[in-house]
Image (cartoon, rainbow, N blue to C red):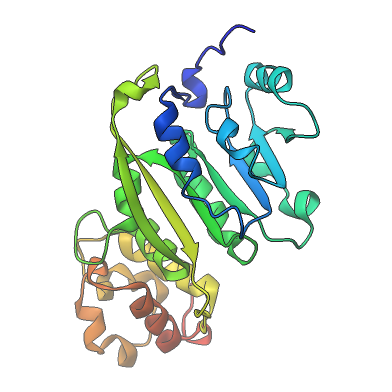
Length: 261
């Protein structure tokens, strides 16, 4: 069967290096996770290293040409091929309440949205690994204190242990992207329980980094936080100085009943 044509609108850059594909597959502990989703398998360069190791491999692919290619390569006993948009996928229909791991060479145009969907469903997703644009990968794993540190860093690191595993050059893709890439791994924290209002927490993080050069006192003005609370020294800091735990503490201090939108 003819190779699939990469489509710019889908952000497709097909990995051609089998050594790198194997390394990505090896980030996953197959003994721990029986249900796996691979996002954007394309022509299956990563799939081939997953299929023989996995009890339940689910391929989520939006490109009809890639779907046809995969159907011609793998039968229904090997993979569960889901044609559609991962961002619209109903996990409960696929897995019920069962946990699952995520892996893939993620389309760069939706990679951040993939992470946010993972965070929203973190109770069901203990493991996540795959390829990102290098800049996004570094942002996810960046510690507090730098310009790279932001919304994605705070929220991901709250719930997952993040690791940047290795970098990948453009020439191992077809067509080669204009940026370097990197593979990361997220392992959900087992000893962490969010003891604040989640909606408020996410709101605080997003509002803070929308004006990241200002202090928290100015970033959060629209929340009409009582002046007594904003006299705390934490409000003198810029958001990039706060860890996820600091934002949790801030959310607890403010309390959902003490703000008005």
